[in-house]
Length: 289
Image: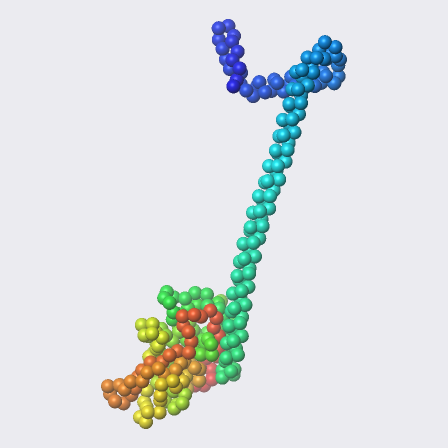
């Protein structure tokens, strides 16, 4: 509380900061006088002992407390800064660890793919990571992280797990868009491996909810084709290299014309769970088919 001073019938308040300044000056002056004169010897010595010395001790105690408090606050500040730095390092390490685990998983997948592609080892190929896909639960259309700079071109065939995924339909310098064989507008000229009978494989997203795609125009007069037979890309396909596994026949039905058969195929690729693919760096037209 600031002291009140009266002057000629008026009163005003002395600000606290001025009062503290005055008391500080008095304290300093008293210390100087104490150490440089004999003023406080004799009768005044008792006064100094009673009032000045305790005051000086109080100032010293307060100063020591304030210095210690300042040191503690400085230490706490440093600890908080160190804690924040360590938290950031932990976050960075967590991200790096997650990235390494993802890359390890994708590398394992790619190695498995290269081991499974024995029948296609005559084709040069490159691995690619899927970086985006169209809306929906399945990879009926998606983007990979390789493009024309890596030798990719439109209509190059894409595989996963040793089987056909689809083909590239658009390409940029460092990306390419792939349409898979389960897309509604996808069509592949296929062949039943056991009988060499040709058929047409068509994508159907609604049917793929049950795990199947369609086939049609199968000519099988002597019932050589049976459930479980392998279906591969045919030699007469204009977009796909021959002999790539598509899937397995699940159902067979006679068409109303009594000339052809149709039914369903279980794809060899899981189009709900894909991370990496193989691109065959060769076009059908390049091999003269």
